[in-house]
Length: 489
Image (cartoon, rainbow, N blue to C red):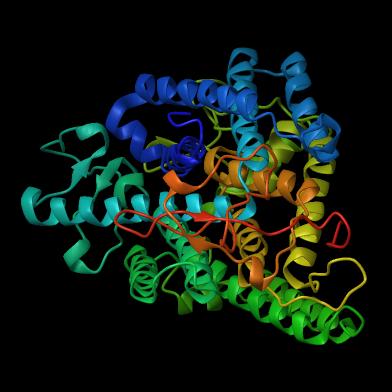
């Protein structure tokens, strides 16, 4: 770290990782693939250095979720039977590197610090996206191609090639620095979750918090993505169920689980039997912009190698078979199955799904009970609920809903968030209670710790106050880990 006595280094590291992983498309447009890979390698080295210097006392290899080992182990072994061995090697290296960064963040930062640094990264990505679209609309005045490719004088340019389509003043859809309205809309959804939690928990000034909540919601409106609205609806339903579960307590939740199962059944029925009507209300076609056709082609290909798949690759390699001739949209090779579960089946087969599904289920199980179970210290009375305990559960819900129409859950930013929450919820049982909510304190005044979740400072109230571009500084913590009483699932 630049200052051995503070948290400045670890906070800067986490913010850079979140920006690189969640804003990868934009960074590649700015610095190109060589620059992006150089930044990724630098962050991995930085992460290893921080991890070695911090020496987290709680770190044990066996504390990582077992399904994570199963999935990564199978992906690595798939190099043996892969039909595109070189691409599989690259894909596995990228998967392992992203996983390493997630593990470092999980062990080096506390829950509140993760919330704070994620919020800061999202502020930069959303803020820069809106500034970028404003610059294009005001000063450029015409669509901008990715990597500043000139628009050809003749011929229709596929929408996928645009970095910005100059639609800010037309009501969208805008694409931001990430060059995709779908990705930008999802970043705005994550921002709405994180900023809303920070505002409700009092981790930021009210004016600052409301400003970013409005910016996030406005960005969702401007991206005009149907799937983001569906994910937002799912997050709101999940929030309502979580708050209801808190009110009922652990012993009286049977009606809640019945209601939750009924809501899920209705949602599945609508998708299967009334998809055209539901998405028509959102101004989209029932084939989900050609995704249904892509899904059928992926299923046909996966059925040729149903058990172990064609070999791991993460992003599809459009120059290699069978991806080269699998699917095209507007003359451009499709880079994913647009469904994480189908992509896992295609690449790692049914065995891969059997390794991937437990990682999702166990992570959802742990973050759910962290969000809704009363925090306790020993056998005393329950402590007051913390608002900030809700954000991991809501983020996982958003990730899962998006995984049905995009494959981002298994690559880059979404995989980073999934592994981070899977690992941290597996070992870090810091009590999420109201009196342990963070207080705002500049990072330079937060002393370094060698144990995630417990940072002692005189007169402080917690870890992870929010900051962002122009925001209030960091935070400190004086809480306690729940080794004697927290929920440990």
